[in-house]
Image (cartoon, rainbow, N blue to C red; front, side):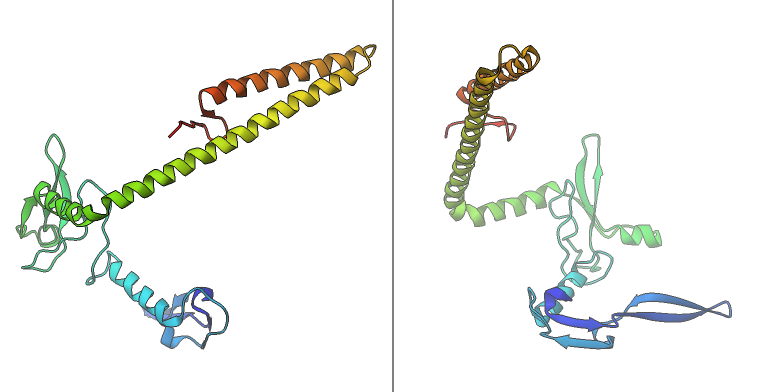
Length: 232
């Protein structure tokens, strides 16, 4: 319980169940907070307080798809409102299926059919409700579109500038390596042909690498990031 500033002990316990006349013991069964053996609040520094932790746990329980009640969070897939729609008449959450040669999303109340073999309460295509919600959301956020575009542009410009700085630093490094290789070759004893030959190879490799980086810099290619640093 570090995040909630609480020291807790005894959060799990054992349970004994009778099965076929025999006792079966299971361990590490989670207990509710009120049944913990020791609870010391504000025991240490944490990210949130106890009340906020309780609210977070309650919201997570509501969001769980295996439990009834609560507003569920949206789920992935082709439908925009998957996991969010309920049928007012029966109160069940609508499922999403894809039908047709060109798969299209369909919302329908499947539980009566799947569990009881009854007719489905309702079935309707997903295009219209998804479009309605999409248009409503876009209309609501439209006043912020300009500010968002300006912020996105500033972030892109900063990212480009960061890539340029990385490229310049890499170019300076390879030029320094080429210069160092040249000095080492010049300082080598010409009579020591083996070492001279090796130093010459290293110098040539450094020169080729420097030329490669210089050529890349003219086209704006940033080797360290694997992308191009285009001018804004």
